[in-house]
Image (cartoon, rainbow, N blue to C red):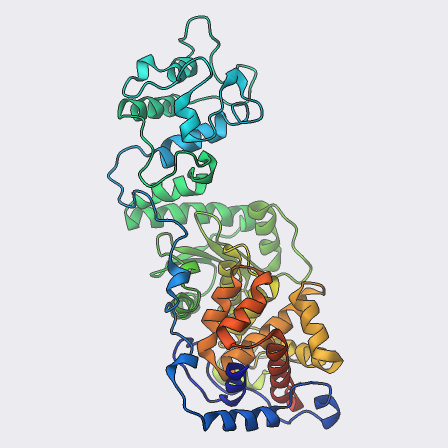
Length: 502
């Protein structure tokens, strides 16, 4: 618990890892005594404990590591076989996917059609109960090739004519070339292991193809895909395409605003790399940013590209599981110029006036939030409250006083008033509405980032392993228990989110 207590003391602490953190906490008046009494943590007691602990001998042992310092998080579970690509055919990349997609439905341990199970390399090379199907170095004498070409006397062509699978000439040629080269398994793989456990996915194959392209060719590919997606969503409008180091923006924004948006997102990109580490953008394919002037176009994008209907309040989406990652949002200013600075202050709490458009949010804030959510979800195991909370927290560093962020703070404060421990546990189990899940996640991240920003990255990276790891992550990162985190974050909510800011 000592690290969590240290976190309560450090409202001015800046432990260089996460440069998202900055600015004022945003609290005006403190909470009423009646409300404060509902939170179990007592900040004053915590401060006394911290001061007492500081009198003891300190060491680096209790300090958080810098981003990337946890070597175990970076190491692959097994060594990467044949990391250097010499251009030759690889069984895992070039042959295994063909067999998995076309043959495993019949030639597996349960069915063994033709008395042949080919689900491991060892079984593939052993062949059927009658004979081997592959003659190393001799594709013309290999039963596998003869059956694929329909050239084995008295035997049917494979796959069967009534099947849905058809081998292309290119696929058969690859198998022939691989057999001629020795029919070898990539170095480092276990021949007894299921082929499906290491066979390249279609995404892997596409990524391999992209790696052979020049940067200019990759950009052209992303633009082609992006324009096709845009046409499906907003066919009546022709977007301007603006490019930066890591992003390609499709929008109808005024040029100055488009350039400014890309500049901000490049800064956010650098910060996210420090925060998310291995899950951050790899820089191979630029991320497409679709900014639609009207929500109707965004809705059509979700239907055409993601094959789904959006919720009533959805304004953004992202996908980093595809070869061409993207973020798609609705522009809060509907494609118009930013209002002048003076007019912005004048309109701080209004929707519209004579000076032009206003909005509850900023465009970079919306993109950043969805960018973070998409990257966290890319791992597939992080709980919803971590993805939504980190996204909102990251956006808050760009739009701290926006109505959107203030609403999140009010929601968190109200949940605290109802009993923070109970409400937070419900949200962490996804047992409540998305608004509450986001508010709890935001509050926990905001407490952590405000008091001890150096703990944010190791906490998030630990949670990428799944919601069931929460207690283990708290113990490892904070040397505490779940109760300690709930009490400390609840105390932060009551002290920082009360008063006029509500």
